[in-house]
Each structure stands twice: as C-alpha cells, then as structure tokens.
Image (tube, rainbow, N blue to C red; front, top):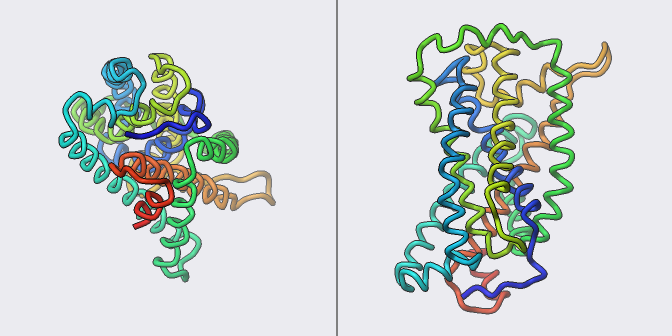
Length: 311
C-alpha cells in the first residue's frame, strides 16, 4: 500500500500544467511529421477528429476516478482484482512507461547530438540527462510541479514568439484544397495524435496525489490545450514549408525556428528551441520515472526504494 504524504499533494491545475509539458512534447514535436506524412495538408482535420474521440473517451477515466474514490490505482486494483493480478498489471504498466521514457530519451539525445553537440559522446549525453531526470523523479510530485511551472512559462513564451515572428512566411492557401485525397488518409493519421491523447491516463495514475476531485472540465481543458499544441506547429509547418517539404522534415517545429528573423540583424534564434525541447523532455522523462517509482510494488522505506528505482 502506498502511503500518501499530504505535503506531496498538488492541485488539478498543477496536474493540467504537468500534462501540458509532458504530453505536450509528444503532441507538439513527435507527432507532427507522421501526421503530415500520412494526411498531408489535411492533417489538421485528423487532430480535430481525435479531439472529439478523446472527449467521448474521457468519461471512462472519470468513472475510474469516482469508483476508486481517488485512492491510488494500485491500492484500488488490489482490493478489486487481488494482489497477484494487481502486481501483474503494475508490471505491464512499468514496462509501458519504460518504453515511453526510452523513446523520449532516444529522440532527445539523437536530436541533441545532431543539432548542437555532434562531438560529445552519446553515452555521456544520455547519462547526464537521465541522471538529472532521476534526481527530480526521486523527490516528489510537488517538487516536479514547481519546476514544471518555471520551465513551462518560458516554453509558452518562446512558442508564441516563433508563431508571431513567422507570420510573414505563412501562406494559408497551402491548406487548400481540403480533402484532396478523401477521408482515408485523415482517419489513418488519427492514430498519431491519439497516441499522445491516450496518455491522459496519467491523470488516473496520479489521482491520489491531487487535493481535489478531477472532473470533466479538467480533462476538457487539457484536451483543448493538447489539441492546440498540435495544431499550432502542424498548421505552421504546412503553411510555411508546404505539405511536401514538411513531410520530409523529421521535426518541423524545430525547422520553423530557422525562419525567425527580426529586422536585418537578429536571426538564428533556433537555440531557443533547444530550451523548449530539453525542458519538455526533462519534465516528461522525470514524470514517467516518478510514475514507475509509484508503481513499484515494494513495501520498504523510501531510501531503499530509491536505490532499487535507480537500478
């Protein structure tokens, strides 16, 4: 049984902000390229359709939240399906969370090595970044939330900066014609946006650390935010580079920074995207590691559990 420390509780708003950073990295960066590759200029429609499907799916999460009476999901599962089944489900969840964190770490380190640290050994980059994430993960959720608020503020500011700075380069006619190849590419591309939206299950995993009940408006708020986080760089990539060129780029949001220019003397501001990516990756991996720590079925003191979590 997981003992809840009241000093570790956060508000629903803080949970929404954490999800905005952690899940937003996937929707804002990783999902853009496959969306454009599959649906072309109609990729934005797939994002909106996925939002509708997600809203329909949310009542299931609310049902779990209410029936578990906001207790730890693993405690509730132990009482409902037994200890062995609960441990098995926890193991499956840990494997899934490890895969999510591994993919994020791989993409982050690969991008870092290619873009601005090509001479630095990948092993060293991986160790330093992962060790930093581990240090945050072994603290508590409230600490992670406080760090996230500071990092997220500048992530949002820089996001609006690149959006407004690139207005001269935007050609909205590139969004036409709509449904040039029918609905099939749109429906097939929905899986990429849905892969990020489904991570809202994190709300259920952290429900016992929220000091107020989660309701529909909290889920609706993060759904709208995540949809906006995808639509912004997605539409930007299409109207700035065109659907064909955008589909060839691995990370279109990063390429959009290359267009930013103020007057004749201020340009090459793409280093700000380094902050955005590393900050988002830092929070995402730290949160996933924290969830893994919570899922460990270990009844022992905090220090021993921390050592086990390291290995």
